[in-house]
Length: 279
Image 1: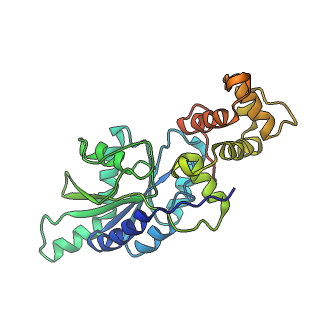
Image 2: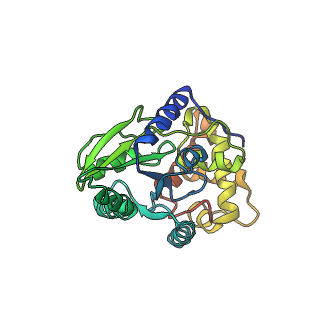
Image 3: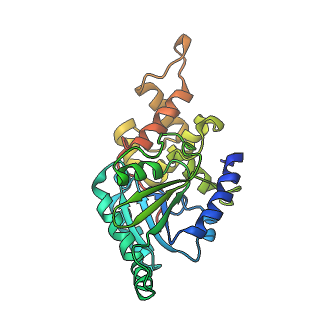
């Protein structure tokens, strides 16, 4: 399934981010814990290659716990500060501030030697659309400073947020990159909802996600949708349509509606804690 989505405002956002990176000390790269590498924008990695980095694997409450541990080890081996978070909850705020202080320790020491006092540490929160950046900003700041939504592309411009401990965060719009060289990357990003659903054939997306579950987590389909040995993705979609009462006029099964239900149940965690990608 070939998926590409790069609306014009992302080009403008990338230029703004390129200018803003010069002003920050740290890149806080926010990804989705269900597909950590697929949701890392290679252009952000390149733009911030000379900056200290914190990787937040957000929505960790929806990803497999054992997979979370493997990803944590993977990124720490690469020398990154790594943390897991559910950005909707405030219990990760202190951990994030601690991570920022840890990463900025050398900068603070350099400033002290130069006689520079109370100079803020500036960190940019960056990532692809709909991974929870603005929700994180609001949780950390304790007030609704950034617009949020469950659709990609809510944040349109850069926003500075002041935190305690002389820390300033820059919230940036979610940006993708012009072309997904690996088709599976585009699929994973679409599965989690970081691509506008309006440009996607929802039935095709649902069938691809069912295929992934048949290959990797068949027990979930067996328990929840009565899948049997030998069922392919089309057979499973028919069962979902029947079980969820997805019908059109004339009692015809509505496969688009069934596919949408399945995709949304995955995104919301109703299918359990699932990680699409392993290190």
